Length: 392
Image (cartoon, rainbow, N blue to C red; front, top):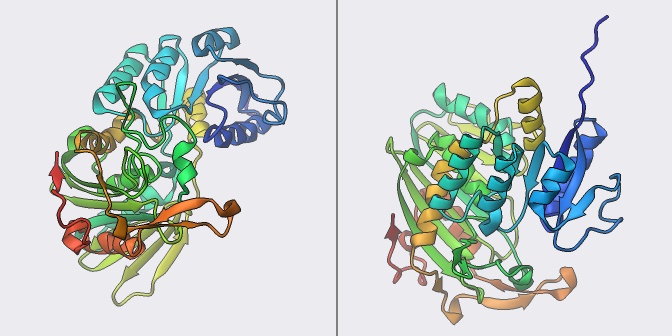
């Protein structure tokens, strides 16, 4: 009986081992246990402790990313660093023939995204963008339902995300809550970073994922927190084929709930809770059908692409329309501060009583936006009525 040849684990360097990088460490450890990769190095200004590297065999550590790539012979670089550093680090890896898993959002501006994507292509390396939810089996399944007419003609797609973030969330790093830092774009808004998956999933279900597919983007950007960027915003994307996509989100909710995307049809609807890979199909005259799908890990998919030619799930070009949204947010006027009577501060009952800011009624408003494909100003939010809708 023949057996498949044993693979040599691919050496991986992780840039950014703290913050969100902890999730990557956990994932690399899981893939390492399966013999697919090995952690060859970690790039951090401050060395990770033995406890943080539990389960790994003393990977090299350095604050010099380029030198670390060269000294470890890395095959893959996982880049989980501040948004405004993504392009330079991805290009450093590409120039050395190292393949890349680049955390979302891929860049803070469309020009930087284009520079990164073109550089990666010219270098001939593979690049996967870390929209992990696009690895869900629910995405092709929903597309198939739409294509077969399960809900009739698609009228539009709405997405909603209502999360709670304490004020300290914006003090965790110098770039957090910033639109610019030292003259460089950061574009760390609610829909461009924490709820970026809602935007990318909505566009993916519409089928308009490439840059040319986003014909127009309207933005309404607000902030309750004392920050530069937005924490409560909505956008409407008109696609090149005439589709309508709205996404509403906040980090000032009364309570955190699972974000979701609704595909509205003239004979039914599909709701996708993308963090749980859960899909609900509802049609008149039919029983509701709920399905939970599996998910393909994006680093594993990149490894399979390199080893066996598997198709990359999230190459840069399928994030082009998302980057058009990032660019519209970047170019929009600075977010409007909500009036004092539109929010209040309170201490969380959990998390040591950390302070957070709450916008009363925002949970319902976000949900209504997804339900009606409307912007906040169109829904009559008093603090949005005097704000000009900005289109790009």
